[in-house]
Image (cartoon, rainbow, N blue to C red):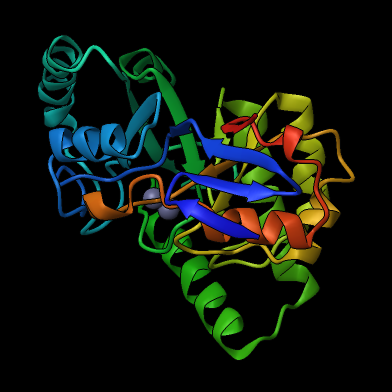
Length: 259
Ligand SMILES: [Zn+2]
Ligand SMILES: [Zn+2]
């Protein structure tokens, strides 16, 4: 594979480029840049669409504040007028906070965003903080030691599956990161619920083998930079490399353009 620029690459005489990046963070959670910084970076990389997706409010330390939602929305409206050459979407990376499938935004709040992504994170506190923290600690220990007991995999899988079935989630962010889970079962539910599986180039949580496994389900993929600083917006080459290693038909990646 030969990389031409940060947003274009050649494989077998075909040119591929990234057209959107829906996973970027700003100072409203724990990113380094402003919304405008990410927009300008995305324009510089030739993206057609940029999504602003800060962490949901229940995340200790990283979570955005609910009171900032209207401010972020109006900032984005103003930037749409200022930069008509790019589509700017207001999203969120919500936290899955319990085994009932609840996210840290309420169903009535979904309409405040253009799209909702969801992921499993340590440090997200739901209505059962003790249980959530116990589960996070358990995952942290097992994940770091490389042990993946079946009971924990079952628990984590149920956690994610219930959230996908209960909520209209556009993208499942970094599946398998921080918590072992049954990736095939999750991919089957993603296919059923029309949820995109993220190839996250920040965490790189999915190996080529994982992608091959998930691709057995009729699911589509999306590459996300998970940029926490503007310079990483649109960073996607590592994701393409692992997809190629997996032998995935790149037409199944919704934000790659093939020329
Ligand atoms: Zn995340
Ligand atoms: Zn993220």
